[in-house]
Length: 138
Image (cartoon, rainbow, N blue to C red; front, side):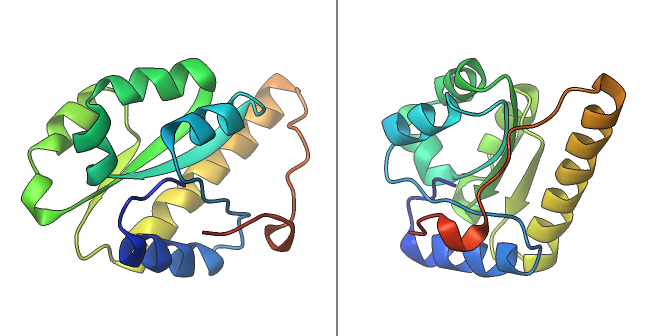
């Protein structure tokens, strides 16, 4: 997860804790891309601040680093104009401020179910994920 606003990052981490999925925060685009290069699938949560800072090319850079990743955009009210562009770029979904926990949790659950379905249909094992308490949080 790469969320530029700390209060949003904390809120998203709290919402994800109820899903039971391991989480990991990164502090920069380069750290995110490096981490994604080591996995075949991931759920990437970005906020609109990251898009404003790096531009829409960020979506392609993330996909190049991890072909099997799914992106969720946390969009500030003032940045609603980014939603169409994000969806056209293949972002799985957008959650608009105030970021209801159930919206984040539901998207993550659906993506995890998709990953499980892909695993069953391809027969390819996924890399073992670290437990949430083994991963650094930010």
